[in-house]
Length: 119
Image (cartoon, rainbow, N blue to C red; front, side, top):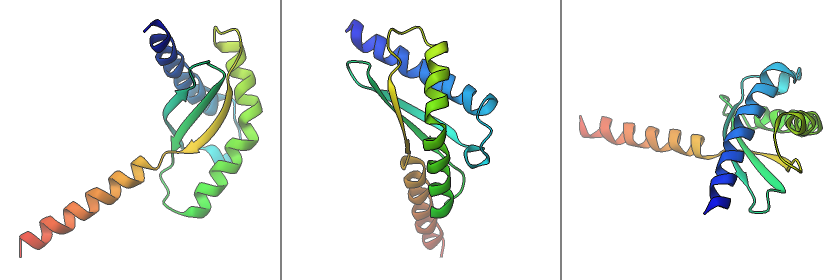
């Protein structure tokens, strides 16, 4: 139980710090305007998957953003190492959060159904 609390706390801390690092330290225009939506940390605290969303629906923008994040991973992990109070800084990887896009798609379908009901 205590381990779950620690994982949750570390996930929140990573999310907050990565948001801050992306805004203040990463100068790459490919990663401007992204939102960190969540962080999953493994039970051994060695790996963290950081989920993000972007406003654009274009696949090319998603690829550019992913490349920018991949390039900035070393800097972000180094910064996390200075900011987090953990023995070993987790290895990090970025993954686009598809749930936001999926939610938008569901909203779109519901709106279409609602418009059909009105006719």
